[in-house]
Amino acid sequence: MADVKKIAVIAGDGIGPEVVAEAEKVLKRTEELFGYQFETEHALFGGIAIDEKGTPLPEETLKVCQSADAVLLGAVGGPKWDNNSKELRPETGLLGIRKALGLFSNIRPAFIFDCLKEASTLKPEVLEGTDLIVVRELTGGIYFGEKFRRETANGQEAVDTCAYNVNEIERIARQAFEIARTRRKKLASVDKANVLETSRLWREVVIRVSADYPDVELEHVLVDNCAMQLLRRPSSFDVIVTENMFGDILSDEAAMLTGSIGMLASASLGEGSFGLYEPVHGSAPDIAGQGISNPIATILSVALMFRLTFGYHEAADSIERAVAEVLDAGHRTGDIAVDKSKAIGTIAMGQLIVDAMRK
Ligand code: NAI
Ligand code: MG
Image (cartoon, rainbow, N blue to C red):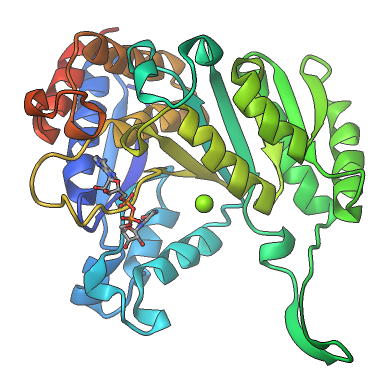
């Protein structure tokens, strides 16, 4: 008997429950096709947890996540909670869960489905073959450094500080090399080593770690150049690893290469294989409850979970192939449809993908 993988399922708010329900059907189909076993446990998180438990991140939700091998998350938030105090806001729960689970990197794949090339603002021939992953450090850098204001002879001055230690750089570098190893074995480390001291340390550590990965080809790219190259030759990148703020910007840039937000998956990882997987999009309150949201980002998040946490590459291939097949056949949810009158709903899209999965 296969070993049972425990998955904490957090549907969340808005369209979260709709898209997560379709992803769970994909989990079931994977069990049937490949003989894997998943034990799912649902937990409350975000706005719904505020309403029912008085906190965005209840203790028992954290326990469910901590005892799981991976977490599948829909999305949280919505106008209902926007004016709440900080501790009663869904986003506070997001920061809290990442911290409590020790998740220090954010992973975003960007690849092109051939038939959706027209949805991108870039020329199809530039996009051809694009399949990259941005690995962003999530817990350090200027977002978390000391910040303050002071009075100077020239008036008020604001200061943000950027700090990285060797351990923080080394752990994310290793993770990126490991991911590159499962792919085309190319890693681009992005920094600003011509100007920033944190970047000089970043580069030193990445070079030292690279000695353990002689099979992975390493290049160093300055962040401003990387921003250009992503638009000029996106297909030349495989894995990109970078610090927090550069990663924030570059991962959004990379995401837009592929078109719609309803298509993009993400993972947050810590030490070891544990990970939290979620679509890049939010709870889309404007379309929640209408059954028209695109479940593909969440379904592709399951494929990412199979790759990065469980090493179930065949099953991940099966999901990604099924999605491509359904899109190739012309099926579209409203967000990716050219002719909106022909758009199909969330459940129909989920079912088509489940039906297209093969061993
Ligand atoms: P959003 O991603 O929820 O929506 C942006 C636009 O994209 C909307 O027009 C929406 O209808 C559309 N959209 C998003 N996902 C879609 C899907 N799967 N299918 C079809 N259309 C889709 O971003 P927005 O509106 O800025 O935020 C809404 C709420 O979500 C806020 O409360 C925000 O804080 C929260 N949020 C939560 C995140 C999370 O849980 N990690 C991430 C981003 C936002
Ligand atoms: Mg951002």
